[in-house]
Length: 487
Image (cartoon, rainbow, N blue to C red):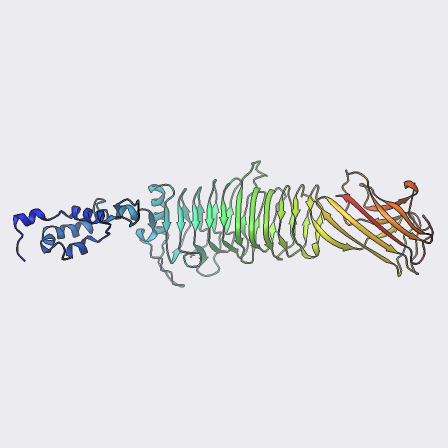
């Protein structure tokens, strides 16, 4: 190879100018390959190629390496920048030595590499992501610093393999987990999944956790206010998927937390604890737990399985459009809850609370038929009733047909109610039709709010229907009554 003349040497571009020229033309190149192309001639390689290769391979100087490679997206309005700038958009755990090589039985301990990457993202810029692919063995708890996101390729392809007993992640304020799974190496490790110990606004999206204890644990009152868990599968082997703290017991105001379109994988997905504001929209859970201090849980379009009966405690919950596989009971601590457009087996919904607004589809029941002195006996007669509830109003229909073996008892006849009336309400009246030996008569149905039964009044309310009032009842005579009253 001949030595270039002075004129030829003068025409040789510097290595930096060559890269800049190509960038302006919309080209992304490795400098070594570019210098070996025939387009600039061998003299260029002799003049600068060796030095350029050395600079490109230099990891110690931020002005060298990928800082010498220009990038320009082939799109209108794109701005040229260096490959170094582009590489800094996302941090990968392999940049810090992680192998992500778990094969089901063995793998490199990637804990230190993951934590180093997360710490670097925290110091570099708010909102920076740390990326990983494959399955990574973790042997102690990771801390996700504020404003940092740890993201994988998908919840069924990128896994943190929990190879220790203990909690896996401390997710700090504004931190996020996305597109990843957590499971353990043996199927018998103890500990929790994600701890949320501080406010505010943590985010978990498209994740799948299989954990011995709580998958997500809001560890103390006020923790995770504004947090969102969405489109995730949270399976706890021995506890619940998500546990909320007792905000109300700690005297705190609203601490909103949201669960959106999540599945439990067969466990109880959520324990509302003593939450103050919680949203649960869509998905499946094998039960729900409410603490007596819980308030303002908004639950909609959720299917609730049969691992345990649903007992609703606390106040001012709003539950709508859900399907329950077990009976639902509002216990004595419940108050001012809304329960509308829901389905339960046989619409078996019991309200022991105060001021709850509950919709119950029409149900049959057999009222107790008694007398104020001695009780009648139905014999071969017929007694049937049905009722429904809209909000805090029950509508009740009763039919009594006297049979040939019916005994009438003595005193006023009384019919038990499906639910006790509101104690501080007003006396309610309804209508009754009486079929006797001389034809039909009308009467007034009376429900006293202090009593658990209704009576039927005749003669302007001065007397109540009984064995001889308003006539002597006989085989084939019937009574039909209807009333609405408040509970």
